[in-house]
Length: 340
Image 1 (tube, one colour):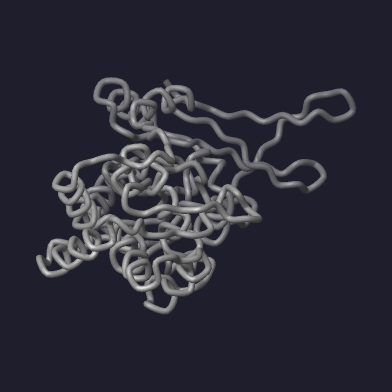
Image 2 (cartoon, rainbow, N blue to C red):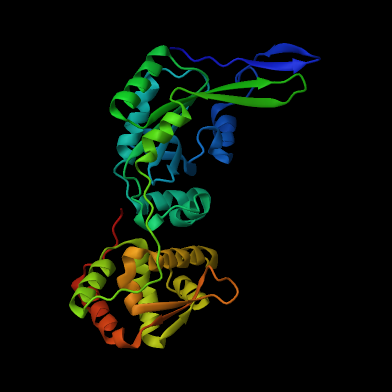
């Protein structure tokens, strides 16, 4: 199979074929095509947030690096002309290096490109994404983008995708100018968007929410708290280092104070970034499975914005237990953050 894209313009009731290409128009792969896709990656996929451009890897500079709403990294290799089958081997080389990167490195790349942390960038790109329960870079996808593809490459992509479920696809573009001088990019994909969606559907996981506190006996509650605060998750670390100490000191902590403290301790670089992190803490507190957290920490909704938790407070009967667990976790050295 060989995919071709033809574009026709309707002019005075007649169809006129539109011809052209990047080279003929004086456009370049890096200065133009790469910048266009980076500005709006929807042309290559609706589920991609770009976090890096010309990212160094052991195999050479990677054109674009993205992450999708499942937390998988997306290796994007661009060609101004036709995609040869060798492009797949090149992209696999990049992906094999990216596969070893943890969340810290990806966040560093994201901050260098977007000026924001990985969490903040993903929270804006995918508002419904459950960041705390998403494995970052658990697997990798490959997108090859060009203006045609060798038949052998299309066969390889179909075989890898259909037979083995490998996340690889080729996006084929067509660049043309209309008679009015407008520039158009038209796309087609070797693997249909519907097929890709079905392939990733199994990764979707929604955790139920609840405001009901747990009723665990003290020994079981202690164990659950220790396990959670030692896990090294992004939000559990912030709860351990910022929220709980504030609660033990003041009893009640307003959302704005929590935001300020995250910035003061250097765990966020701005109030906006800290607000994103407080939102993730709020999401953790609302998960049904985290009823043990609600057993010791309560909250009140914001008076003006009822969807926000405006105040957190420690339940008096569990203050000593929470203080003991915090000391145990800190002294055991088990709370080192994981890269995910």
